Length: 118
Image 1: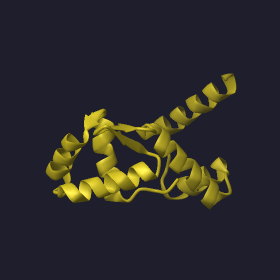
Image 2 (image 1 turned 90 degrees about the vertical axis):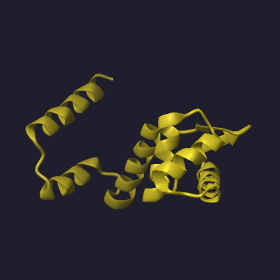
Image 3 (image 1 turned 45 degrees about the horizontal axis):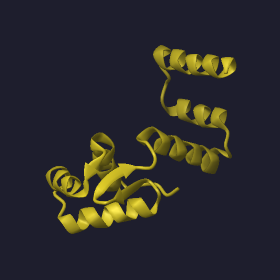
Image 4 (image 1 turned 90 degrees about the horizontal axis):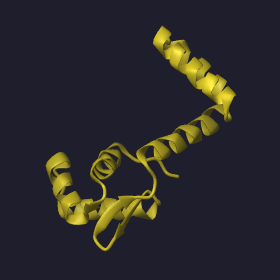
């Protein structure tokens, strides 16, 4: 799955926040939020539909992947491509420049505990 650019991500957020929505309403929202013309909105919508993120059926736009599913796939792809799929290597690299707070560590431990139970 291809990564979205910053403007595509903002446009996608409009869909995720308001779906299902008529494509005309999406165009109006994009005009307000992004100052886009209708042609730009329809072009970007088609591109994101072609990537399998959204669908526009009968003039109603809905997602095929939730925001959480999309970003989970992007995160997994990043770790796979950059750290040979090693989450520990990613966390080690991440924590060399940014100290993890006690709250961060507690959340990570809770995730690990949940994974062990499942």
